[in-house]
Amino acid sequence: MVTAGVLVGIAFTGTGFANTLPLLIKSHSNYWATIGKKLTYIQEGHHGPIIYDFFDPNCPYCHSMYEEEQSIIQAGKLIVRYVPVAYLMPSSAPEAAAILQSPHRQAALRRFEALAGKSFAEPLGPQGPVGLPSIKPSTHTTQALATNMAVLQSTHAMGVPAILYQRKNGQPGLLPGMVSRGEFLTLLPNLK
Image (cartoon, rainbow, N blue to C red):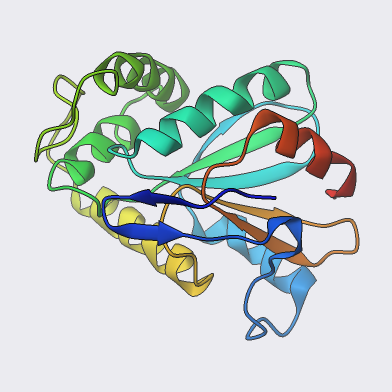
């Protein structure tokens, strides 16, 4: 069961792996095929099923989720496409831009997560964690973040983290909120 949590006033509730996307999706296979073309993401892993992990740079639960996924990725059991969104704090967009506008996005994400781990250990101020890289978002990055957010909102997720996945039968699914390593391992055999 996915646990309930609260992050910056946004409630997450889930009923486990049975959660699905709204019935507005007419063709599940068509949805999954087009989703990767719409989103801007940073991929980690080369083997296993693909999931999309929506995160905001200022979300401590997203950082914890990143840490939970790493051993599964390194074991070659999962491909994670990290999809940044920027809405929790004013610093979210410049921080997401620092990752997306980097010539080495994967390395930038890893560096960011290492810094975030230290930052989230301290109490958060109104601007989020202190010391995370940030730059002015380009027009292209602003549009990419807006598209990522629109896709997240289309799933009716109540916030981040949110995991979008595809079942073996082709049907998409959604896990809102924090997912533990054990829950990922339980889910893996059911993923396409």
